[in-house]
Each structure stands twice: as structure tokens, then as C-alpha cells.
Image 1 (cartoon, rainbow, N blue to C red):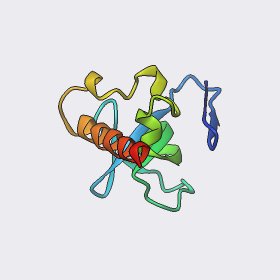
Image 2: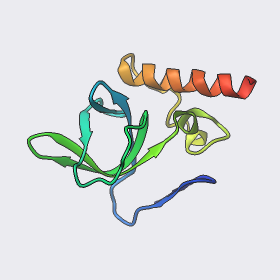
Image 3: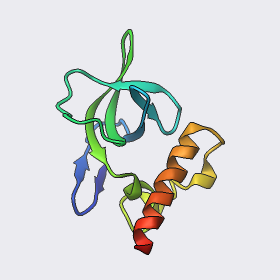
Image 4: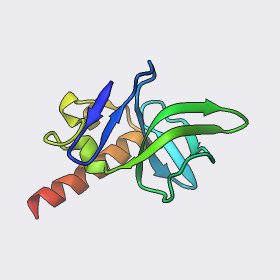
Amino acid sequence: MQVSCSLVSVTSSRTDTLQIAYKKDKGYMTIKDDQVVSVHPSSVLSTEPEWILYNEFVLTTRNYVRTVTDVKGQWLVDPEGWVGKSGYFDPSTFRPGPAKKAIEKALAKASKKKRA
């Protein structure tokens, strides 16, 4: 699987799919299944970005994600952006809840930037 934009290119030869999570409290919430996760201690991600893309979900005494990189929320919802063309992050496809609110917030932020 190859996911790319002008700044990011991620290739996975594994059968895992790349997933997205957003910052929530002291950890992250996975966008598709509302799982609270932390970035695995072996990660080299040195910041706590608002959105992350990850390849591995590791279940120990805590839920961790590994193989992590930061992404911009507007890349996820902008139809001319990164993966938004697929409609994967279309807010109307999400049930009411925190994930939908996070996507709507990213969409509002992306729309505001386009108008500016």
C-alpha cells in the first residue's frame, strides 16, 4: 500500500492498513474504532501532534501504536489533499461521537485556510 502527498510518502508491504488517530487528553483516539492509545515508547516521534498516522496497533497492558508519523488534519478532509478523495474522512460517514467531532474540527480548519 502506498500513501503519498507532496511532503509524505509512506509504503507498507504488510497487510496492515495505515490508520489515523487524533490527540485526546494525554493520549490519542483512533479514528475508526474509538480506541484510546499511546505512542509506543520505542517511537522516535518527538512531539505530540494533533493527528498521527500509524501502522501497528500493539496491545500490552496498554494500547500502543507504533510506526508513527505526524499528519495535518486538513490533509485528511481536504478533497484536493492527501487521502480525502476517497471520502474515508467525510464527516457524514461517521456516527455521532468524538471521532466525528475531531473530523468536523479538521474540516472547519481546512475550510478556513482555503478562504484566507
